Image (cartoon, rainbow, N blue to C red; front, side, top):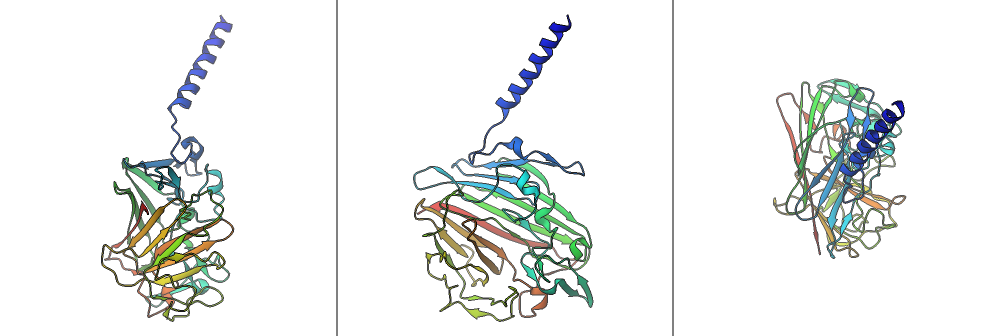
Length: 351
């Protein structure tokens, strides 16, 4: 009898295992959702959330950093290509040593000397870039757990509560980031934030793009256009000098669509020109796949960054770096009686 019971129990376990294996569906980018399941010390569960539209586009997101893990879009032959760098399991994301696909805050980019002054009070921020604070500090939003709700197959709502004093910033902050995959192959990113005390905010998404495919070994030949006649020069520590300079005659001039210079290490903020609502702030194209990406934003700036070690580029919509120390830059102060709203769209097509 014991033998029979043992066999029956084994068969039940096998049946449950097979059922789980059959029920799991691999994403278009080749990801297995079970490889992203993880429980934090606080009992929170990380998952892989998948959005799809009817035109073959797919976007996946995880809780940690509200990170975009993959974006699959059709190429000129109708084949799906993943165009952002990411990992195929949760473990590398737990190392917290990069910004792949992450929501960055409380302040994207750099703040000089890790200090800010607001309403006559000086706040000391945690430094993680020499003496400077980069992307919100060593435990910025890219490292934090976001609560995610998925109301439908084409959107996810990511929420995070940042306590007063987190990484040294004043005020408690409620942030909501909504990703929406539209039927015209666009990924809309909407940011909304409120605070209980005046604070500085600057959010962006830090996806690393390669329009030839995430596994491609180069971005050579990929073309770029940025609707910006000016940029903010920086010193040797990547801190803006306060000057607004013309791009004409510099390596930063992408006012005409041209191949990216793969021999130059870009890490510079562009001052976007005033545009009509239907005009892109930037555009990138891969001749090999025919994939085109247009960037639309309500933000005044765009950081163009290239990574030689992992061939890719970033187009981070933002307010300007070190704005708290630059009186002539657009303000990044969020007051108690205000709501921060910002929208960025990455729209894909083929040439």
